[in-house]
Image 1: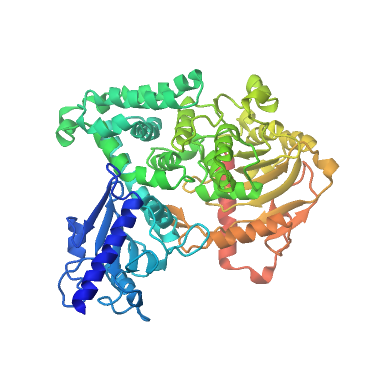
Image 2: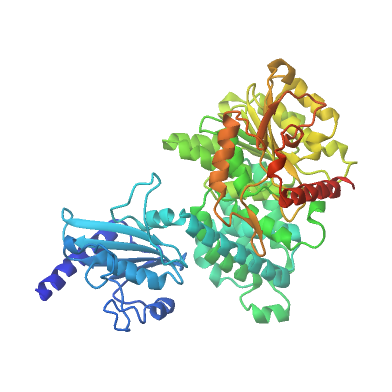
Length: 630
């Protein structure tokens, strides 16, 4: 009987093998490695050396262990049983006899170092087979049933790409990957700083240029063979080849190439001095390319809504000497770029503009949200080619934004390297050529450069808001995040804006939202080309000071207690319905001379005040004074 069960189990294994083959696991050059009943991976061997299902203290292995060269920290493990009645036990405590019990047994050992996709298969044919899929995030012993994007349990053997994608969007897995990316960004900065010795503003260009170069298959396959002297030239040629494929006008390509050419010309990226050459015999640029290929590509290939280039830009800023605020750069956190898309309720039918695009964070979040509503390839192509407009004045930041879009399969995105105040460009956006397929934008998203002193009148953040609103079609929605000083202090721009546009809402944001930069901000929402006085509507004010994010020593502000999604849902519901809640939201008639801030209109329930509330107010006031009394 035992012999028959073993023989039938071989049939189940053959069935699994055939399904893996059908799903492309055995295709050449895909980087997927399948091992059976053993493993050559040292970490796996160490973790399973006492994983006997019979609890003898000896080692044991599942039927299949599947790995991927591009992300060695993700494993698929498979256990098989011949009879479906031995699929899983009631208490999942019989690993020797049941498929689910067995695969979870091995997964718990391996999850100390890996994120595990555990696959249990029982039965001997297509019609008489049970399949269960579980996810065990790295560092956890708890398993979760694997579900698809619609929350439906997966009961089939999927392709490696589908498994990896579904596993990656588990919150715990995503947090671990983000943590790993933060740690890598710090290490990469150290490498670039000590060995490459390139300027602060060129560091993110080195990252984005490398990511584009790695898209070039010949370069990806051969960069390890180039000499240190040849590597910068080959790197630049690979970038040029990828830009040539992109649907970008030649003038824009030339604008993009120049910053990368400057980076390639840095002497230490070619032939470094003897001391550095001894430590990195294949060259500093090779080391950077190898590290980015190993650590960043798996992330960017999955998280299409994540501004990876902006992430590195922000991380590198942390190590910049001097006052970060003096740089005039305040990058928008990802959860805020996504919040903007929710506030504007962006769909595939909208056209979105960001007149201060930076690294493209708003455009990436908008594109991701729009693509989720697209049903056909034609709609997806329309979104990427026609429904995203970006303007960025800095040539280097423009190169970062354009590279970000190219990395997501979009070679155009209607990015413009120009001032957003340039008359010719403004005319082209407000009266677009119908032949180009691009419509006048109806959604504007903006985080303008923050003025560095009171004398920067021409750079007042509200002038950028006004410019964005003027570019939108009538009835369009403009959302911006700006310093609170813009909305509580009298200024003529408030009058100019309300003469043409309606102030729909203002939300007070957390005082440390842009930590470590000490700028206290608010979100303003406008309806374009409908004069505020004529609409005669109350403005909704939200007190959004607590987003659930907390400061940590090494990762900055993070959603440590996983509160953000619930908080965001509550905020959006109150905003969408103009709800009034004591101490949280209020409506009021305002004009250009009014204070546009919730605190001016909220009724305070003094019985609920705590010492922490007092401390927060004092801290907010101190930050406000610090950032405005210059």
